[in-house]
Length: 305
Ligand SMILES: Nc1ncnc2c1ncn2[C@@H]1O[C@H](COP(=O)(O)OP(=O)(O)O)[C@@H](O)[C@H]1O
Ligand SMILES: C[C@@](O)(CCOP(=O)(O)O)CC(=O)O
Ligand SMILES: [Mg+2]
Image (cartoon, rainbow, N blue to C red; front, side, top):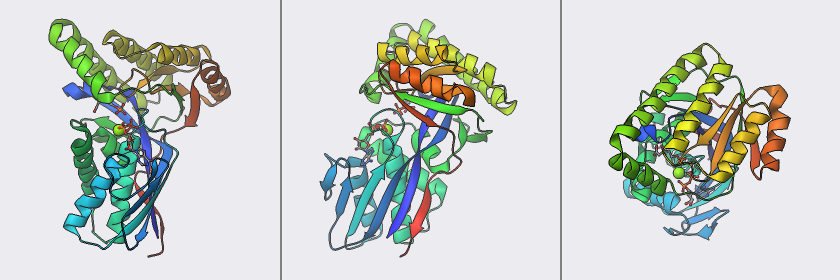
């Protein structure tokens, strides 16, 4: 049996702007998906979504990895079991984490010799195949870990603050929200393009604030980024309630993470405010997850093969 795991991710800055090659800052956070693999007679994929064989309805991402690898390195059968602490479909990159952890598990079982760059790139190709357009950000950050400047892929100093994620439990479709922004931009290019560029500038300024450990200013700019995301139409009432409650409870900054329209927000929190912020997220109808940045990207947790 081999066990590999990979982390979730949050955007401190730059979601949506990064689609138009503006800068973003994305962090791996210590909420993980674990994939166990061993040889077996057939293909079995077991997760909280169900127990299947190759099944592109229930396990599209994992099935794609299983089939692609089988083509390159034939094997008789494997049994894959997945446990995850990452909420599914909430903008935290659960698909990227399960993809890169599954690739890592095969890499070690079949001794494929893939390095982290190859795992990230293969993972991105799987996300693109299954969901159509997909930025490389989620799979890269889940593979490498840490705090990453996008598109430069430069590792930055991790924020020493806590990151409290508030899950609205409201489903949102990344594709639909990206299309909504594209439509607004095509109608009002002279208005929307400068907003996306300003988000990119906030992200670039955030890089130096992280370097200088100026978390008060970092949070202030995250709030500005939130206002700009509202301006391009990706906010929603549930997210606004969690964001404003977090700020009232002492968050240095709070904003959407990911596509918006539902899913999650993230608050930058000093230790002394963790309980108050978590409580206020709960009172505002959200599910708080207290976490922080992890340098540990995809990794082997157990190998007795
Ligand atoms: N623990 C898991 N086990 C199996 N598949 C998973 C798991 N987590 C995520 N997935 C796959 O990823 C999909 C969610 O991906 P996506 O819609 O991109 O949301 P997210 O923002 O969480 O990445 C799920 O529908 C499922 O196919
Ligand atoms: C909106 C976007 O910038 C981030 C989407 O993040 P998520 O899929 O909601 O975790 C789209 C992208 O970068 O692929
Ligand atoms: Mg995803």
